[in-house]
View 1 (cartoon, one colour):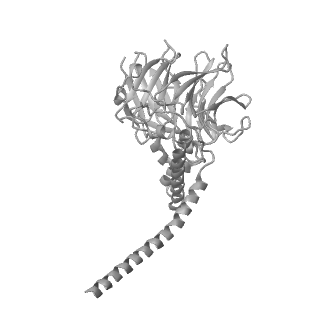
View 2 (cartoon, rainbow, N blue to C red):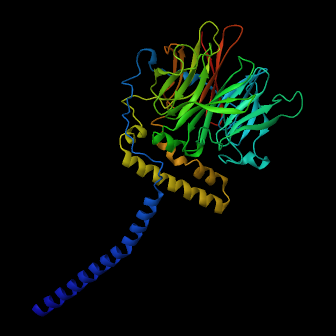
View 3 (cartoon, rainbow, N blue to C red):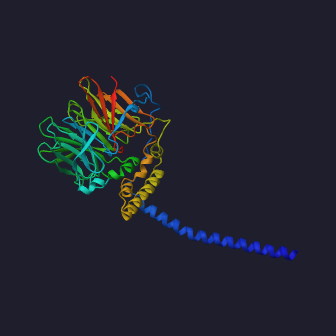
Length: 439
C-alpha cells in the first residue's frame, strides 16, 4: 500500500510539474504579444493630445426658464431616407437648401421633394460619405442676390451660383482652400459662416473649429479640449483672409447681431455663446453672452421682427444628475488619451478592412472614428433654445425621451397668420424635422 501511495504521489507531482511547465510556456508566449501591443499603442498616441483638465461645471437641474418639457415630441419627421445629415438650412424663393453627407447641395421643395443642385467631387461621390474628395457641406447661407455660400468642412469655402437653375446650370467654385495658411497656420476643420453684405462687398466670417483636428476627428478635438480654433474673415472682392479671433475651443455656429457690431459665436467645448465686438467702444473684446447646459451647434437669427432673438441648437443637454462619459474624461487626461487612442486604432482598422473588402460603410465608420461618438452623448436628449440679444432665455424646447435626435440648426419661419414653424437640421439624422409652435 505504501508503494502504491508513493507511485500515486509521484504521478501527481509529475502532473503538477507538467501543468507548471505549460503555464510557464503559455506565459512566455503571451508576454511578447503584450509587448507588441504596448509598443503599437505607445506609438499610436497622437502628439496632438494634451493633458488639460476641465471641471464639467454642469447645471444642477433644469429649472426656471430651462424647465424640462417634451415639446419636441410633436416634431414631424419628413423626407426620411432622402436627406442624410442636413446640417444647415437656408431659404431662397420659397425653397430650403441644405448640404448632406455625400457632398451634395440639395433643394427641398415643400416637405415632400428633394432635388440635387450640385455634387461636390464627381458623380461617384453620390454614394460616398466623409471623403475629402467628395466634401462635406456644413454651414450654409444664401445672399440677397441668390448666391449660396457653404463651408465644406473638409475642403474650404465654396460659392454656388444659379441655385434655382433659372439662368443655366448651377456651378460651384472653391473660394478659400482649407489648406491655405492664414497668419502662418493652416485650418484643419472649418464649420460655419455668416455673411455681412451691408457695405456692398461680401465679408464672410468663418468658424475655424480646429487647426489640429479635421472633421473626421471632431470628437477627438472635443474630448481633448483643443483650443486652436479661430474666427476667420474673408473679403470676396479681394480674396483676402485674416484672423479675427483665436484661442477658441471648438468654435461652431456663428451669427451677426442686427446692428452688425458684434459676432455671436458658439464655443462648443465650453458650452457657451460668446459675443465678440467688431465695432464701437468695446471693439476687439469678448464677453460670455450665456452659459448653456449642453454644447452649442449652429446659431441663427429668428424670424421675429418685434424683438431680436436667436435660435441655438444645443447638443446633449444634461445636468449633474445625468453626466456623460465626456464629463468623466474631462478631468482625467491619462484615461482620455488611452480611450481616444484605442478608438482611433479601431477606426483605422475599420478603414483598412473596408478598403480590402470594398465596403463603403466600413470605410465611413473608420473615417469618422464613429466609435468615439459613444462618449459624446450621455443620453438622447436634444434642445432648441431661443435667446434675446441680452442672453435671456425666451424659449427652451426639450426632447427628453429620445424621440428627436441631435439638432444642429434651427431655421425659423413665421407666416402671415403669425404661425411659427421651426425646421430642425441635424448632422447625423436621415430626415428633416418640422415643428409648428402654438401661439
